[in-house]
Length: 229
Image (cartoon, helix red, strand yellow):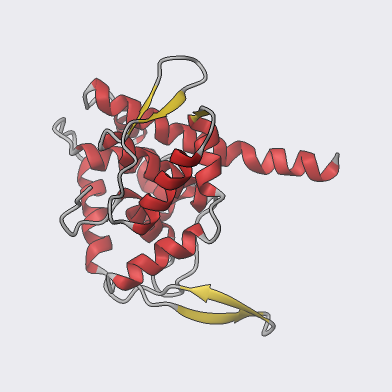
């Protein structure tokens, strides 16, 4: 898997989810969104497939190392599974990888886009933060998304469509553009996220993104139920 120096989808998601100056997470459920982006990346590359059943079982067709540490850790986890796992459960399993968001942020530090730092919460607890030091990559990402959302162009880049699908339904899209601005483009966003502007192959990837968001929405309720039962 060679991205020719471009950011992976999961790196783009993390970059959009961070507050630029503070280096803190501005949106909820970032791990699930990152996990959905990793699975979307693997689907786009033909590394995994999803069957047509209601369960959406995931098949691993190529577990060869890619050279990307985060993706390779996920591939190893999937290859080590002794039984079939559904798409929804893989989103949860990958999102639960220890320090997932920090691993992604540190890769962005290695790319010299972020800087690793620490601050204190209530002057007591240390917290890892990742302020932005090079805003150019994020500006390019936002401009891609802006052109797709705020125009009527039907020839959209597949990766941009998938990224918007990941950002939609979470706080990321609203954090990036503002909910007021997006309100007038609701129909356009629906066209993009339903796969109306891309081929059938991309619709499968978009479905994976939507599953990531569903998992993000239901997990807090499940955890709350477990805690109080």
